[in-house]
Length: 281
Length: 168
Image (tube, rainbow over all chains, first blue to last red; front, side, top):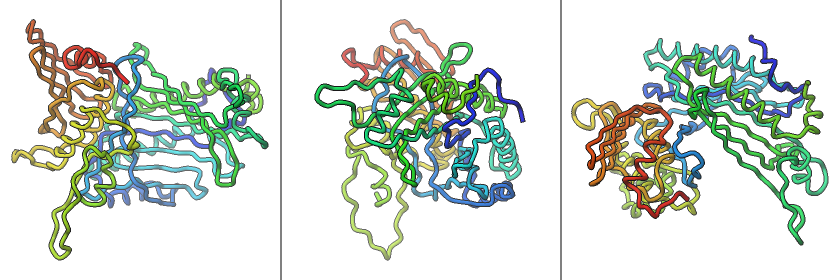
């Protein structure tokens, strides 16, 4: 396993609750549900649990005019109703903290914090799992004549859970504490603080030649866990096109996305929270 | 349209009349695709969205060998990519393109008027070829593109969008 870069912010106890590394590729149209059994057979030593889910939609980051607003129009889903849809499958480890997701046009590795004792295994370890898994999945597709993997988008997602303090106005209290130095919701005359806030930010990711290659999407919104804990959920997604079709190109984008996410997380959150999360100097 | 398709197909503008009663004793033709969206109903679609979705719904019905020459079925990922490209490139009032299927499973989007022709061949995700012809000067230009469509957007805005239009 490679070592983490030394120039990235490093937190001893980051509030991360889920991380995923994903590659989307041109659809393997020959792949049908029974083939997913072959895939499970390849991975079931480490991922013995299985679950079936509807497939995720394809998503593409495309670019034209800088600064043009995105029209509030829907994503397109394509469903062929004369053909049984090929599902997405979850292959999960025994402790349910690691997950492989496979569908016709996606391969995803997730880590999930299930219990308070679960510790984020770190990006480098997840990338090893992802690279090994994608290599084996691609080889299996080739072996069975189901096509080759042609990556078209990569995606890194970090979901952070920041618990709210007890008492009234917990959302605003935590917004100000964690993000207040750059985000200050106005106090309106006669109304006081807002009851609720949420944030959605989008940034364009540029390559070294300054061409756009992807986007960073950040959302911060109130949420709650099944145990009744209220929190702010901060989701950071870096998505874009790999420079080429090789596994190395996919890994390079995932590393870039991780770098952008970790730096952005530090830039967006307060020094007070950095101290709580154990930011190493 | 069957109930499942109706549930998925939530654009009011495109709704078909209620289906006729079905005789369960008779084999029924298979109902297939409609382009579906999870958009809230309050969202207004522009004319080009409606044209695109209607046309795509008919193209994906074609299946394989739609031309009797062994052509591939229209690829869903090519269509979704084309939609994303149009979202980036089109103003609300830009003229909708004519859409035709291609033998390799991609689609071709075409705009034509007295001023210019634009043809965009979407082979698949990140694999696009754009052709432009200026009728006044005879200038032709063809270039490949992956995810960046600024030039296409500029040409569509100049030649195929009313001057009063602006992005919402």
